[in-house]
Image (cartoon, rainbow, N blue to C red):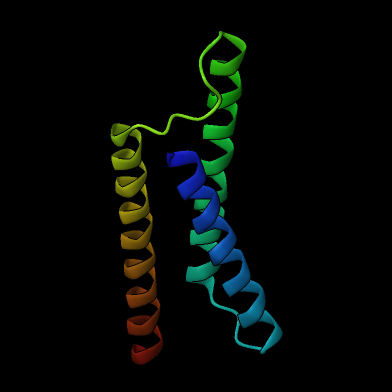
Length: 94
């Protein structure tokens, strides 16, 4: 489940990044968060494939895995918030 959640977050932030870039307002916080979620998705993809090669199910849809995914999403969104605030404070002080 955490794999699916991080892929969804990565796709959402990728769409946001390209929409902002197209409108001429690129956002570094969105870009950084997008890369973090793609890194997490890649990491879990490798883990899922390795587990499947050992006979485990490809996707873990348990409540514990959903909780782990929610924690990762919350951490990623927290980093996004901190990056966004730091860029606003930096722009305001310049």
